[in-house]
Image 1: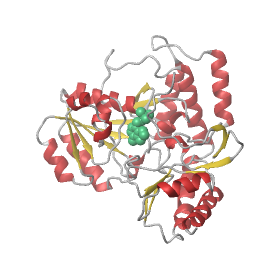
Image 2 (image 1 turned 30 degrees about the vertical axis):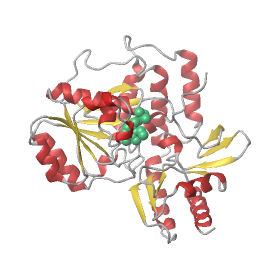
Image 3 (image 1 turned 45 degrees about the vertical axis):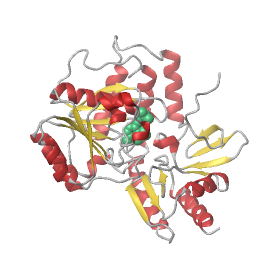
Length: 376
Ligand SMILES: Cc1ncc(COP(=O)(O)O)c(C=O)c1O
């Protein structure tokens, strides 16, 4: 059997990783400024994480959601405390798309409505309602057209008010900072107005923090830069440093009912252990403070590169925009300088999503390499 060939691949085969570094099968060492799409939050193979998962695997790795699993409660409690979201309840699943799927379904159950408002260049995943709410026709199949979604430009509040006024909207879904789309984001005024109009009209505000959450933006969730309280928050990538997990955080004014949501694998013992150790390390090593400090250093250093047109994003969720396509630049960074970076649907933008324990020295190493490649 061959693999179903859906991914264009770089010809690099990582076999080992530690902190912000990855080694390939030939022993070449790479600086990882991409963390496998922003998944590596506390650094590769962090010893606390490895020890916690190994110990858990030796006890019990999995049982379904029909028994008591105190690890789920421990994860919920720690997440509530560390994220300052104690007035939310937690539903665990296995991926970002699944988190959004459940969030949209919950909004529809609760409102009795089905239309979704989403935004230009958004990405919310590849499953049914999540892909329909994603602004990319190429990844929507005919079966996904059943879902009614209206795409609006970011920061055009009058259009949001107009659509919600029609009375058939279940949810507004919006990324804290757009990831795949290219690091654009709503203004504080926009987020606040969207929260207000949703609240007045019984429309669920869903904040997709799958990429921007878990400290990546310099606050636990990116929406916390804007002082709002969404009805639902979804998160995934950085949550378990590579162990598959997804989460839906639901404001506690919205009640649960048996059978409303469910999953076989979600919230299993290994996933919870991975999630708990990520939160422990985030807190003990003050990684959100580090994200903010390293961000300031990044801004100072990148300002010395005249070819850079714009910096987008916040914290360690960054986009570096040029006035040319960055495909070749990314190849040179990987193969000549041994540095992983990411792309986005904005072809002129380099996406930087390093582990949150990256150092200023490692950022300086990237800046020097970038200068050399740009001037070569
Ligand atoms: C903002 C956002 N939402 C949802 C998803 C989907 O997550 P997953 O690939 O885990 O299904 C992604 C993945 O890139 C994302 O960036």
